[in-house]
Amino acid sequence: YNLYVCVYIGEKVVSNLARFVVIVWCFVVLVLTQSYTANLTSFLTVQRLKPEVTNWKDLIKNNQTVGYQRGAFVLELMKKQGFYESQLKSFGSAEECNELFSN
Image: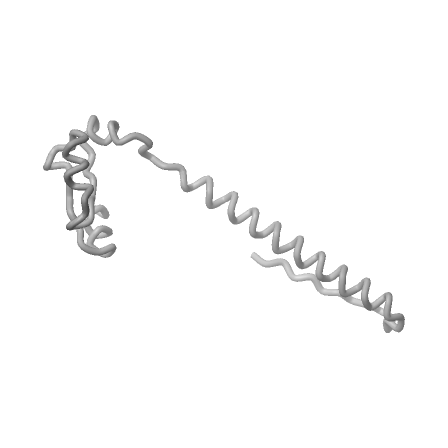
């Protein structure tokens, strides 16, 4: 959520120095508000992005399904690492990958 700052000045600002100070103050408040919002959003997002699997050996041991893009070199690499053919699923597009692993 963006926070908006409304400046209410009861009297008319006549001095150019006072106008400059008000403009700088508004700019600083805007920057601080946006920075706080960005940091809060980043903090909340990073907490949800912790990986469930950190080691490919765990995937082999737990007999997890692993996807690879058709035609990619990783198929042979995964077979050499010890993945079984039944664990490997190929996909051609992002949509197909989503369908494959949404079940």
